[in-house]
Image (tube, rainbow, N blue to C red):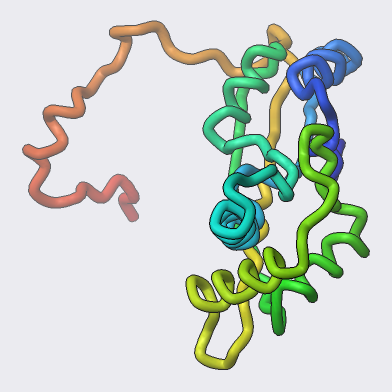
Length: 188
């Protein structure tokens, strides 16, 4: 089980393979991690402001795994019967400084080694204005979106359910349009 720490791993495919390796047959892995669309408001605001003020930008928000990649990573690690789900959580803040202070307090500062270590004051002020203009609400607050990815994967075992053989269906999807009324199978 892993709760909200997988986004800090540099080699996520390797970590998932190791998790798969230590599980017993028919064992389950359940995890949650921050997803790719997390803090997109902050990311966009900083990129626009830094490009305008400094002529280019550096990543100031950590990179996160996209939901479209997570199922593939679990499958490549050997997991079966995969389930991936998303939950978007919006937290409202008075301004960009409060967002960044909260992130720092959570230990969620950017870990990218190739980022600029300094944001100039005028860039932060410009980013605050961009953030409020693009995403601000009528009450003056700004949202910070956190995308949480939930995952479940099973280590294969012969006792697990197997898909039916191709072509073994007894009904066709094409026949569904011919059904006019549902049938009642419960006879009393």
